[in-house]
Structure formats: C-alpha cells, structure tokens
Length: 179
Image (cartoon, rainbow, N blue to C red; front, side, top):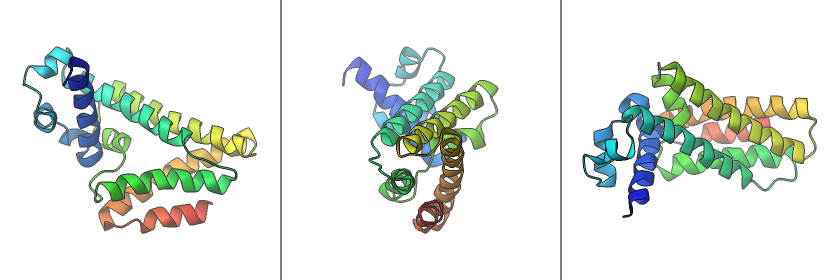
C-alpha cells in the first residue's frame, strides 16, 4: 500500500470505529490493527496523534455524506426524504447494525470544543446539502432549510433506535412520516 494509501486507510478505519463505537471506542491501536499499519504510522501520518486522526475522520465523514446526498436523484420532496433515509438504511444494514453516524459518536463522546465544533459543521453541511436538494425540487428556501434540519434530527434518532433494535423499522417510519 502506498504512503497516501496507508494514511487514507487509517482515516477510514478511524471513521468506521467512531461510527461503531463512538469517540471513546476509537483507539489508535485499533486503527493500526484494522489497517495492518506499523505502530510508527500514527505519528508519521498524523503528527498531532489521535486528535488529528479524529479531525480527519470527521472531515472524511462530512465529505462522504456530501457525496451521498449529491447522489440522491429527486424530483419531489418525498424523493429527498427517501434518498436520505436510504443512505442510513444502507449504513446500518450493511454493517449488520454495528455502525451508525460517526458524527453522533463524536458528539456523544466528545468534550473538546474544537472537535464538537467540527462535528457541528459536519451536521450543518448535511442539512445545507439536503436543503439545497429540497430547493431543487421546488421548496422555498426557508421551508427547505427547516425540512432538512428536521430530517437530519429524525434520521439521527432513527439510526440510533435501528441499531438498538437491530432492524430498520425506525428508519422506515421516518421515511413514511416525514415524506
């Protein structure tokens, strides 16, 4: 694996660990175990250590969600809702309900204001991207922003409940009721 490939693999492993276990469950030791990278890789690729790795995992999560939202093909507001809920359904079902939202994991386990600010920015970016999609299908900007924020809030709760129940029924309920 190339130098950049190792670094990227470590960022993705940190992202997934946070999505599965929360911020406190993400250790550099586990990142190394998942990637097979040598121990010195952490400080080689991330001079500020775990904090830098967390920041980059948040940035990765933000970009990943932006790409997912951009890929939603929508002609109606219901299509936007369904498309967003389908993203989360793929996450929870694809990991056998072991992973959820990494930003929720960062927020519930985080105490560092800089990390919490970064997580807030990621949540806001998702809501902004959804609002843009709602506007593209005809909603006025204020309504689009409100619906997008409500959708993020509802989806986060549904992801948590889906993981606890180990089924996607809470996500289906959100898709039905918010659509």
